[in-house]
Length: 519
Image 1: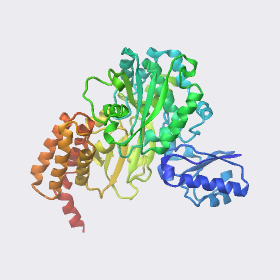
Image 2: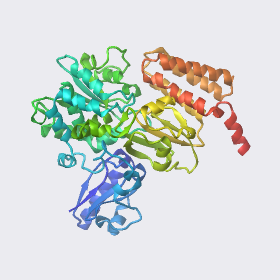
Image 3: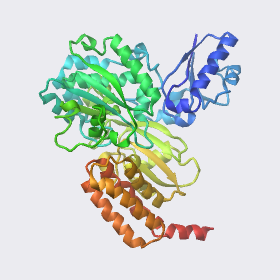
Image 4: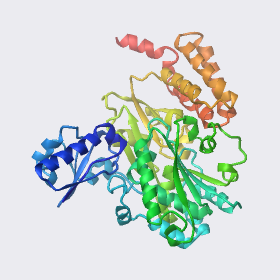
């Protein structure tokens, strides 16, 4: 029997992967071919999806991007034997986009059957959880602390400190919450890991439970991720059947249960305290701090809230030790980071690498520049609230402190690329508009400031008292940055001020003058 891998990842499904799988099944039956179709995750090369892989005597051979209607031609060309075809890629791990990566968290994604525990174990799965059971809570936290792992959701807070705070807090009930409300534009790492390697997240949450004496976990997923919801629910059920979850995790005598909760897609529910309100069945609004969730979180109990990638990174840390993980990266940014690349880009997708590559290396060497072939003008890093970096800042290393020093954010490590046709004044207006729409309304700087900011940028666009209104926007941004209750209002100034600072010609009419001269 020949095994053929057809991705179930949303990248591929959006491009017809389900239809391709049905087509392959039908043609295999008609031709009497012995084919097993495995719905795997994505390798992360989005521009090649759907990318089919076939097991051959030479290893797995990839073909892509495949479209519905291509399967008959593939079979005629000897696809099942890995023969030549116009869309033959070869061994996927030898493709330059994958060969340049350091895959730790995503080492199984796209390789294994996401819902096969046997596949998961064969590729190192559960090694971290087994070692965690042997170590006990205090030593688990020590390993995570020693690794230097910081929150991959954007704040970059040391994970070991957060876990230790919850571990030391006395309570009759504690919780682990995975923040899977991946709302930033240009980000998809959480979705990819949940669709392509769900047991990794389950294992990471169980490790966090053992480390903090928490017995219950929730995965807070957005409704826009139907494939991830389905895969996670099935994986949890299989983990329960295998004794990975339940009253005695792998026979340890320690209990940990897990369930999926689906949110309605509010951007502000990606903020941890709004997420907790939503989990409790309330309208998602930001809570005042203190108390911190680590002391008084879900249902008033001590709670660890971590991003999906943070939790999914811990099995590798526990399996190989904190020192192994800390060996990657630079400065205080240790380990690897899954960089998500989108926008006007030739080679978009997920690229996992150790911290330290420069922004220019990522955009030019890894991505190959823009899809349009025009020069890169701006790169937004960190989602819709991230700063816009010009080409002159391409020497900035991908590192939390290096980006902060240049008034930028790494955030969830999403990168959106723009060519030289982008209107940066329009981008600044969009940042205010986005904040106004998504604000929970609890604090005045965010609720009112975003609306007034949008109105003021509109006046600049209309040429009304440009210098005065730019000064007003700057003052407004200062108020929002230091007066907002959460990062939604507090970070909105990053895209606005970076657009004004790095691309002043778009705000003072110079860019329009240059366009008219060129015409």
